[in-house]
Length: 312
Image 1 (tube, one colour):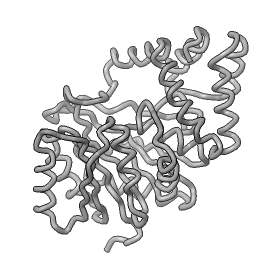
Image 2 (cartoon, rainbow, N blue to C red):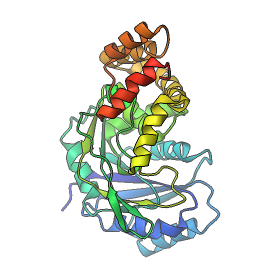
Image 3 (tube, helix red, strand yellow):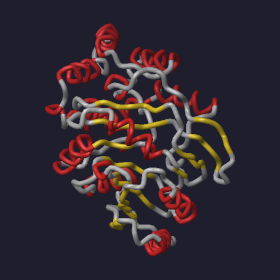
Image 4 (cartoon, rainbow, N blue to C red):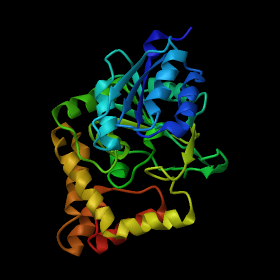
């Protein structure tokens, strides 16, 4: 019998998801960890997404399922609306896209990892994924990251896809407290979660074992970035104006919560800000002081080059 204290709230963001939604929903039913509930936020779908969800609800009357209308302001805002609706009873929250297939042990792996952390410290769990095409033919695994997760990494790189993420209760409470005051304008909700949780005295866990099939298709908002061209494109983004724009957006969202930061994270953030302005010498000096890093050697070379040409 499962521990009642290990309840997980799955939060599913939906928009025009009818084509693959059935398989995603059924992969929840196949989870080895059975103590979960589901909140769905439909962001204005005009296909039959809501009919599929209603049918799933009818077929599984024992599942605690809530359906809400999304804010219709994009996928990040939809996930923030979901995070704000997680009840106080679940110990964990699991973010879900609408078109993946979860492996049977996905929730169980996240629960185990998060349960080994102190309950009063915000913690985020994420994992690798097995990438496939829309017909579920294998393409490969997402990149494996070996350097430890931290705020110094989060400032310049998103670690794991939101479709793999789980939060413990302390992390849920932190995020709910923030979004109750203001909804952050961010590049991506999953990157922001990695940043804000590690900035505010929390931790992140990266699981190198894939926990789901990440389906690639034309409607994907964000692709796998697995091909050689995609890797080179990420390097290009680091030295183009796009990365600088992203940092401006992220830093504004983080600065609004600076009072919540740990002292070390506040110093890192201050140094990173200094690395984005002033003379070349001062920028390099500040970047080294900040200690920020990406997960690959080439990524770090590109990071310092972006600093050199003032594109941080």
